[in-house]
Amino acid sequence: MTQHGTVMDDEAGQAAFDAVIEADQRIEPRDWMPEAYRRTLVRQISQHAHSEIIGMQPEGNWITRAPSLKRKAILLAKVQDEAGHGLYLYSAAQTLGATRDEMTQQLIDGKAKYSSIFNYPTPTWADMGTIGWLVDGAAICNQVPLCRASYGPYGRAMVRICKEESFHQRQGFEILLTLMQGTEEQQKMAQDAVNRWYWPALMMFGPPDDESPNSAQSMAWKIKRFSNDELRQRFIGMLVPQAAILGVTLPDPELRWDEDGQRWHTSEIDWTEFHEVLAGRGPMNAVRLQNRRDAHEEGAWVREAAAEYARKQALASEGMAA
Ligand code: FAQ
Image 1: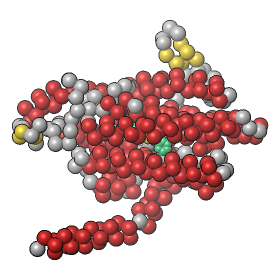
Image 2 (image 1 turned 120 degrees about the vertical axis):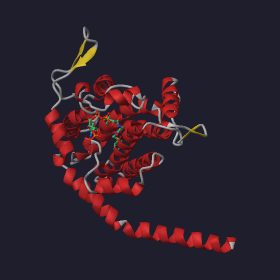
Image 3 (image 1 turned 90 degrees about the vertical axis):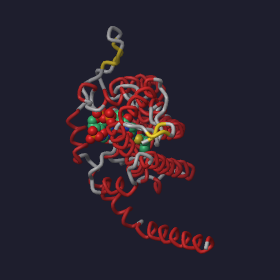
Image 4 (image 1 turned 135 degrees about the vertical axis):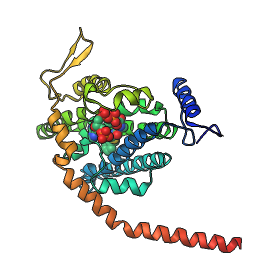
């Protein structure tokens, strides 16, 4: 292993690694790093990549049914952005030695986690609004601090992803605003979608801090900069004034600012539901995975053709070199 080009033993490597983390600088792929740091990054980055790829499905469901050509073009571009995010993230994980094939296999075997949020259905057009407003909104809250993650390729991928997510969030907000300015039926559809997505969006930040096994170490390594509960609180603070502008009600009768505690007081999140979804028993887990498997199998000919093309190109350049 090397650090700035020199071969290092584990002790020197650890000291150099600690100094980089302490100085808030970046670890790069060829630097020495503890094995557990590498594993944590592969875990988080690959789960994040899988989330983007599976996350294309709930919105993909509406591409052919978007209410106008303009809405269709916007939605198509958004779903394509999500594919792009998945690809940058798989590439970042590959710099840590994970292969794309391994990661894909874990996903389609149902062995890899991806965000709980994508296991909920999208029965109405208003769900496209709430995915943008609440899901991309939560993603931004969680991911802006990840732009400063200590691992260089991850942090750099997050910069571009966050720019695109923030555009996605605005388009979702605008869909909801349009519906809320529409007929009574449209307003009801928007409120119903907010009711269905609000709690699952709060769960995106992960378990409460005292039940989050990975947080302390990830924060010490400066992968995570804020705890799950801190980010969840920040998200609620962002939503409250935006809900007022939209004219929608956040479905929590207990939601209020607690001046003494300087925090948002909320009802209890249903963590049983969260654990059920993580265990594969959410409303759409089976469908999402089956679709992903089918897409992988149907895409086999593309991978074969690309490999064959690469083989022929390599032969041709060998021929030219000879
Ligand atoms: N869903 O100890 P912690 C998006 C797991 S992208 C499923 O707190 P950690 C864009 C966790 O992995 C959304 N699993 O874990 C988009 C761990 O399991 P493990 C994805 C969850 O890593 C928008 C266990 O529970 N974003 O939305 C969830 O320190 C619209 C214990 O948890 C990212 O991946 C969950 N919600 O903190 C696309 C961001 N929460 O691995 C399409 C990067 C926790 O030990 C449309 N990731 N778990 O078996 C992170 O920031 C972190 O990984 C957390 C979890 C905060 C998600």
